[in-house]
Image: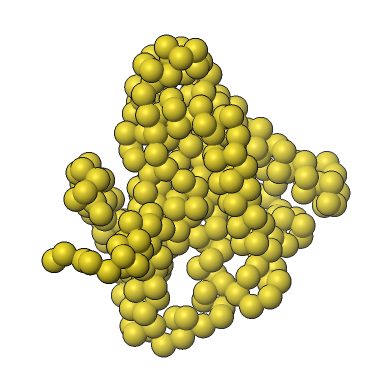
Length: 325
């Protein structure tokens, strides 16, 4: 069917339109299945979960945009690591605001270090990104298990748990902070900085970028490092929201972050993408997961449907742009 209305065409071509429409549709479905689905408390909880996934998706989008088949399958392991190890530095500072700052810096440092190793492995050792990040995922899980001895007994400080306090309506502190970070990253880093421009150029054509004098290796390593930093911060946010830490608590976020960036319009081949779209994609996935939970599905069946959804999304993304639209 041919669409002649210019306003409708403009909406369809907007990269944010599909996830926004999908989110509205899922909210309607959720309310029809469960009364009170769009209540203030439930929306607040959904936004918190989507905010945490958005942090991971921002980092994942950066890696994917960099091109060269870039993907980071270690983000879930990084989140689990910082969720378990990040709060431990609070004891030295006596649960103060300074303690919270130390936790944030420590978690971002740990995540960035893993990302740096991922970038060096893919660029200097020429290991395939999928293989390198999967290997690093096991290394990180092993390191976390070694340090915690499999028994994560820690106290979550009041300052860290305060990220989930309600400010107004369904908006909590963490949600507001991440929304601000999201727009800053989109317009100051990705679109408004030299690094953002070089990232897109490298992702579009690495050979042309190299001939133009761009250090493709450095850009790619920086992308992985930034992705690790975001995953590290997301892990700390996750444990602050949950109020408790568990081994591999960030495991599910790996595939969800990939699906979120694809739903948000990021090309898996690199060179095209945005952070706001990735965040909207994260919201779609959180809504979908919550609806699946209303059917009281066992965890295994929910994972099956999530995996099936990811396959469908990747199949659609592999088609040409005209078909995707």
